[in-house]
Length: 209
Image 1 (tube, rainbow, N blue to C red):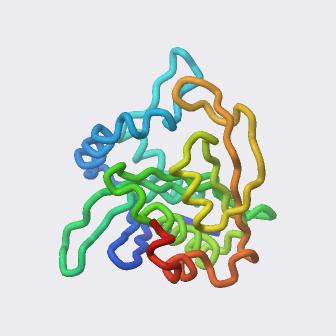
Image 2 (cartoon, helix red, strand yellow):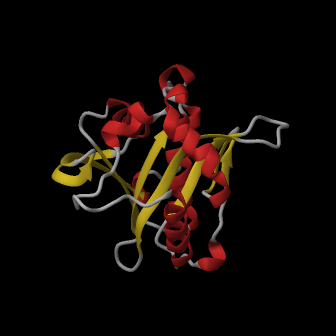
């Protein structure tokens, strides 16, 4: 079972780096979210309690870090680091959540990327990298991604990577102020014997964008 000694973890391929979210990332994270507010608004999780609130940035980081140490979450930031540079640019977020051990060995993955970097293969690469880690290093068996049917950009990510469409989940999550339908996509470890990242990087660039 994944446990505290296994976290934090940093994953990388080429210039893309998945690293743990940190308290000191607040300024960069907040600025990126502000620039992408309209881009992300239709897909944002909301609190179904009319009197409830979403967590602050520091509350979110504390909660996600505690979950990571308990073995139920992998909270990554998506960054780009050019060769020879010590600095990495924040371009999005990816969280593997709801990690279930025992007879299920499954998890759910969610992500968002900067609108200025969308369509350049960052999201599929990040999803492939994280999924391979969960299958090969953690020993998970199933990865699930749930997407609003109207979110064409996100649907393209699972389509490019070959996730299997498992159908519609009516009123599955509270999004942008209302209970919203989602389509569920999944892969099991047996379906991708070579993993996701290697086949994805072998795909011609014209088909990856």
